[in-house]
Length: 101
Image 1: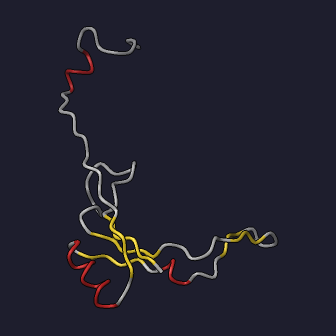
Image 2: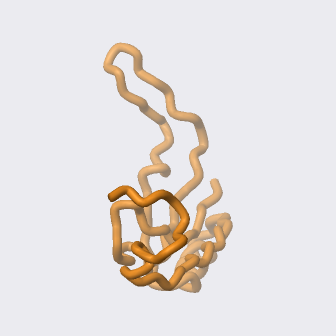
């Protein structure tokens, strides 16, 4: 079973960087989830899919996998593109879009 090591990105509901500084280790699913028609929920017999470990650094996560003999792959993080903007840019002349007021 292969484990994924990655740093989670921030969700659309976050304005800050909470829960994005730590590295996570999660197992890839062994079998697909099945839909239970009677009860209306998805189920899986894969118990390792419930394991989610957090590490302070990438080196700690790799050391854990090597110590426990877990095959792993590292998913590179994509750098965040930050564009410097000011509030005045919303009202500048010739901006893209139509004026709504």
